[in-house]
Amino acid sequence: MNVTVGVVMRGVPPWLVAFSPARQGTTCPRRNSGGSAKRGNPRGSAPMSRPGRSARTRDEVFWRTLDTSSPEAYRASTRPHRERMWRELIGELPPPSLPPNPRSRLYREAERWVGHEVTLDVWPGLFAYGILLVPRGMSEGERRPVVVCQHGLEGRPQDSVGPSDEPAYQSFAARLAERGFVVFAPQNPYIGGDAFRWLQRHANPLGLTMFAVIVRQHERILEWLASLPYVDPSRIGFYGISYGGVTAMRVPALLEGYALSICSANFNDWALKVASNEEPFSYVFTHEWEMPEWNLGHTYNYAEMAALIAPRPFMVERGHSDGVGVAEVVDYEYAKVRRLCAALGIPERTEIEYFDGAHVIHGVGTFAFLHRHLQWPGPVRGEVD
Image (cartoon, rainbow, N blue to C red; front, side):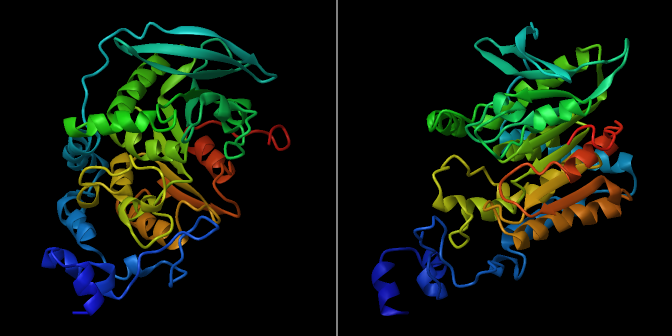
């Protein structure tokens, strides 16, 4: 053994020594002045050189249990996984115990839509809140598709609607309302610095996560949206950016009331994203210490979550310069989704769009995806952006 390793690792179990960076002939990346981690391999593709143990475990416990012979057989084969993901990874809380009791007030009037702030009861002391955008000019008895637009970390529904100081959002909620979609932009609780992280930390020993609460809030939101006379309950889609992309992977995987899901600026090999001590995009090198999830690497990574969304449509929006990950990792994980949809005979229900940009809503391929799969005609050329 290298003398340095022997000194540093004295008293450490042999199995742990075997995995030490010094033993492997590598070094942990260090943060440079630009805020990224230095590494010897600029492609960062070493983790994909061969499937790791966690990936092989997921092959055994998940992929080999799926029945792709028919949509009905597939849904039946995914049901136990949906229940397990909810119970073990997310944490299952009781359904909402109060009536929705919706309260609203006018938020803003625009040329093509009217916005309302809405509050819905969930449990005593807990509510769901968001901004509802209703397009003008709807006919009597008409039922429109809905897009639920989810903000990112430290965001608010007002950011999704815009205008916002945060350039990532590109007013995507308002732009979709201008195209004729009913839009709801909910508030998720990942806001307030470390306050929500401590709530997550307190929940973890109870077998719960922040998303145990978020799922029930969205369950209430779906119930309420479906009750609106101008909404088609079978055409409610989800579109989330960044931490909203985290939501886009988890909530629609569990709640089948969402007809499709779009993950923007977030899709990844999530086990690598959370735990790698080599990749500069890893949460190991950031302040988001709430990210580890129980046994995710052996159960439901992002490809598996997307598989639980299937056979409903699923799309990834990815900027080439987005620092949340690198293309090699994103493509590696997404390839499993494309292969699954091909096996199910529905290759047209999944897409990935790359664009020359960073951590932002692009709103080109994704908007077309929403029009196509929520069956709403696109705008006349030049009518809206």
